Length: 170
Image: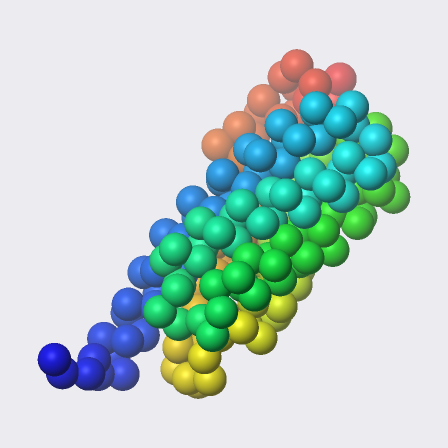
């Protein structure tokens, strides 16, 4: 068996990061909403929901990134912690006003995606094996997926986010 070249390794980690992050975030968000709703949308429910969503997202990502991490369990734990940290601003906004602040603004959504992804990525990077090329490509791709997923609703549902049921202008 031959070792992959730097370009093959960068491509492999990029694909794994993109697919794992995309699926992990979608499945994690779904579970966060279910847990938060089941716990009646209290402040504790928000943190528990984000934590469980992060654990699940980390587990999904860990399936794709297991060859590049020191410990899959540590990866999952720091993912849950990262999601709890990015959930903290939701505690400061009452009754879904954070969503209203985001509304259809692409720049705001991109900024929140960049910061949210950055926080989780920095924590997860601590568990990656020390390969500079791997870490660099993984960081870039993962943050781009976070930014893209935060911007996606505004790109797809632009007018609906403004005037639809529960929209920003209602």
